[in-house]
Length: 84
Image (cartoon, rainbow, N blue to C red):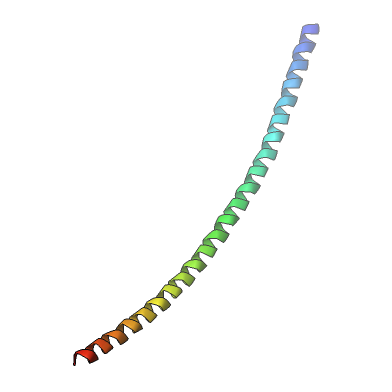
């Protein structure tokens, strides 16, 4: 009879341990999900900033190209004038 109590006691301890492990896993998984959401938000924010930067840098390059193109055209005309 003492052996049965010991077995039942061990089974109860194992069940409690199992429930504690499951509980700790849920807490851990909620933390991981929360951190994953933060990372996803960070990636989204970075992507949006990168898109804005790309638009800004493209506009700046186009402006500089326009300026250089005008200078080349002006110099080309001056060069043609000197040849005549």
